[in-house]
Amino acid sequence: MNNTDQKTEKPDLLKRMCSVAGHEIRNPLAIISNSIYYIKTKLGAGGAAVDPKIAKHIGIIEGEVKNSNNIIEAMLAFSRVKELNCAPAAVNSAIKDLTGAYQFPPSVTVKAVPDPADPCVNADMEAVAYALRCVLDNAVQAMPEGGTVTIEASHDAARALLSITDSGPGLPGGDGEKVFEPFFTTKPRGIGLGLTIARKFLEQQGGTATAQNAPGGGARVTLALPLKP
Image (tube, rainbow, N blue to C red; front, side):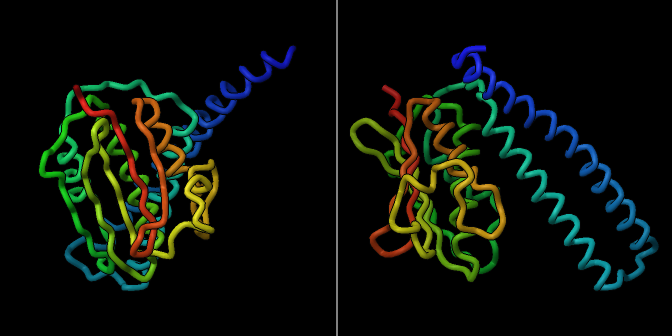
């Protein structure tokens, strides 16, 4: 086998490995979720009060199942090429949908700043929404003690811009490229694929994803898409 064949085979092997691993891990996670649901139903039968310690540990199990499913989802998004379904869309709707659906911790203040011009792009907004959630997850996790996250839409002559700014410690060493490297993370948990996937989805649509330290402190990640002519 020559070097070209080996280079072609490795991505295919990675894709297959992630798919098989995701399937095999999701099955027991689904069983755990169903079992927890059954236990909660039995414990609360007849309106009985659940022991706070038991309720706490059930919550821990549910949280860990959710985290595990999120990791599987990230692995699959990283390893697969997403088939895009592009259509005209206004960028302000992306901000509205994101802030309406995202579950922010009580300690995080959210500021949504729409673009008065509400520019239009031709994009797969499902992929854009996924990328925005990845960026927002990163911003919220950068502020474990709480803070402010600003989600803003704007535009220049050629691009619509969606930026998320947090009030956390900023980028490590001020390096805006480092954070997009696969598996790079400064957090004690997580596999460091969120921003990598965000950039991947934007580049598939002719866009870009960049990061820098914000002037007032914290980090800012900007997703840019070509404006619809």
